[in-house]
Length: 243
Ligand SMILES: [Zn+2]
Ligand SMILES: [Zn+2]
Image (cartoon, rainbow, N blue to C red; front, side, top):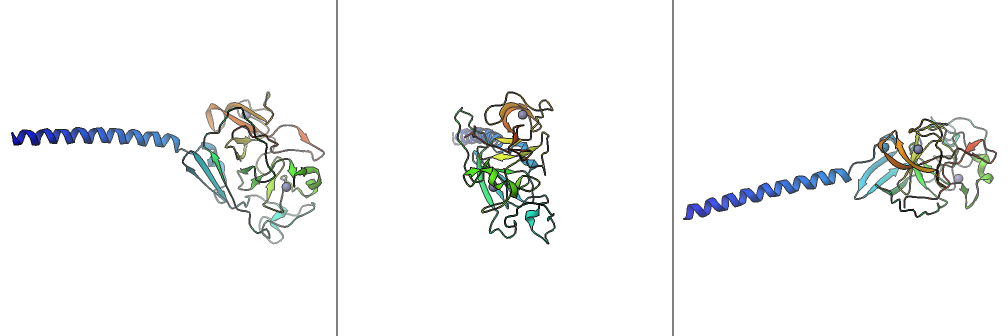
């Protein structure tokens, strides 16, 4: 009788432990699905950025220091090139270029839109910030003379792009960066067709495949319309579609 009881409880423990190991491996699989970083993040400057999953969000920490030449590095720096622009302070004389943004791993494409602010609206693949079409809350024209060869300048805050950043996208389908709503921004062309996309929404967005996804996914493009007399293109005017 005692032996039978022991046997029964042993079998019971065995069944319990099998059930437990099944359910725990299911949990692991579910977690893996939600903790995979989007393939596009592999294109970001690894020297400047640290990118990781935090729950349902992606955290992007950056030094803000871009991986390309500009006169904004300042004379004497390895990245310095001479440019004929109205220069504001150099990157290295700025107090702090570091920025951390937290974005949705899966953007909320509910149809609601939110306008962009005069501040960092996204992080570019170079590691530096993306700004909108405003300067100090006014039109960008006033600051146009200070923009470098890649559509960026500095001050009073971080080094940031307003125009198509030619250092890493120049009339092509390259990834530009990720915006605060978690939606990726690409160049003026789309990988799905190899040419300028048609039928974009007000934000320059549409849903197709990209070089980073085999399934169609909502993303923005730099809109292929010249900005003012700069001979270039605004990086992103907004509004956000993914908040
Ligand atoms: Zn600016
Ligand atoms: Zn596209």
